[in-house]
Length: 128
Image (cartoon, rainbow, N blue to C red; front, side, top):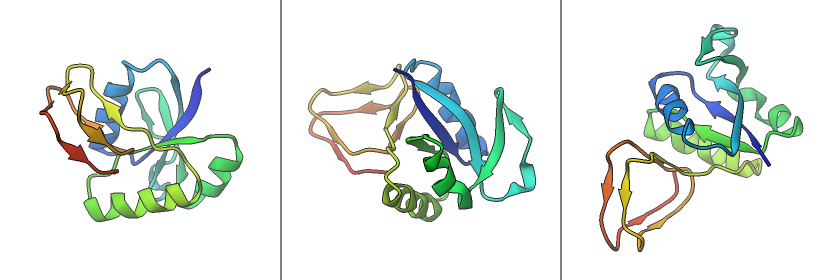
């Protein structure tokens, strides 16, 4: 079953996430949510910016259970992560298919492991 998801953030990180998501077949990205409605209607890789960060409750009520955070600022990303988790969104980690991860690493949710990353043995990565 395909899982409906949104991307939160419409900048450069959004494009990186969309690139990685091409290798995942189990998510349907339905839209992008950005800071404000200033860029509503803009299209990024065939996806429209049609929500703001104030719309998370209605997005959840529309049956969208998953979110991917595409925001560069650590503080802002942490705030969004907490807000989305409080609303019971699922925030999976995304791992680029060329990344190399040892089998014994421990990792929380909401992480982004980019192209060519190498994570060695006994590493522990928290959430977000």
